[in-house]
Length: 447
Figure 1 (cartoon, rainbow, N blue to C red):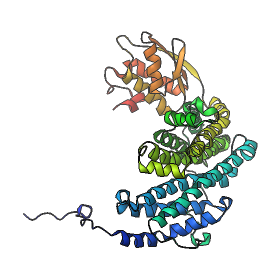
Figure 2: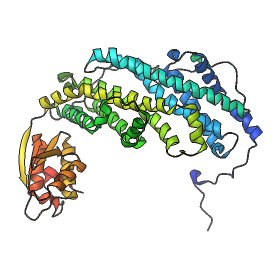
Figure 3: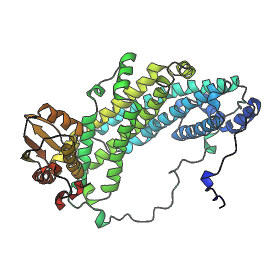
Figure 4: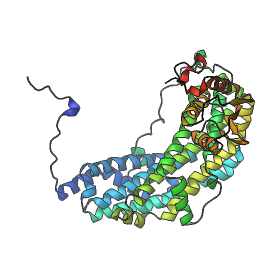
């Protein structure tokens, strides 16, 4: 029987051939020419003249050339290793700074809790932060040029002019000749439901932020400790995603609906989310850069090269003080508005439930409680023996219930809708006899 033909993605790739250092120098010089000319332009001009378009093209060009180096095994090559490492630093600095430059140009168009604070405090602070990062980026670009020349790669004269870069996506668009229409089916099934959910998620995000983010952190060791405890790359990406989800939820469920017209304060939460998102985009990019060299290359040549070009205290100042702490300040500005909205949109009730006979509260029934609260998206508080926590947080409830393991009485406080479902859950013995028989009201909890 003949062998079946392989699918295109399963075809064997030809074995890699070794390219000489001399030949690769020529190729790198040719394919890196745009990057080099763009770097020349940024080195010759004042950072105040840089635009987001410069930085986005720098990031894209650096990504393409870094990919070229990686595809040719530059990290394992004595001649090109350093050039590749410096290029990675350029890439992530450009990514981070472009978020700040974008924010600086757009922030005055966002609705916020305190426009005067935005104009007089936040705007100058963001601009200053961007300029501090530009100083680091210029230093690294100069280092890239030196590494290029040390590897005997041609570095061109002259700079790439801005008008030759082409427009960024979104600067050119088709005529806006279709009137926006809101489908009645897309409107909230209950007045204020989506707004209440947004306000609740906003407040949950504020509560999740560490209190350590309330004040500037000055010392290098203190900044390093903050990074280790509260701003690893994993944490940074998680917070960025949560803020982005807030923004997306607003745009999908609230923008252009009657709910938005009835509660214009919702636009403040959307504007605040935009501010915070761009700040955290910068944090994530710089944290990735820092962790890559601090953790994985701590004792290696890559780390030593990083220390030559990037002052650690300045980079951590950008991440911690210009990023995380400033983002937290933005969230705190809008916190009272979110609380006021929630009070207006959500009726609060109390419900005391007793554990059924023979039931012990543990992780599985607690996960069903969390499922109910998260399904409705409005805040519910659990109180046991005078102590309380969020019923949407599995970790908080495990701690609270574990501390009072002998208690049988549970007080829930919040929106009557999830409280009604919780009453049904307790009546069905918290699923300990199986979830298949759950009534329709809580059928969404069935596996």
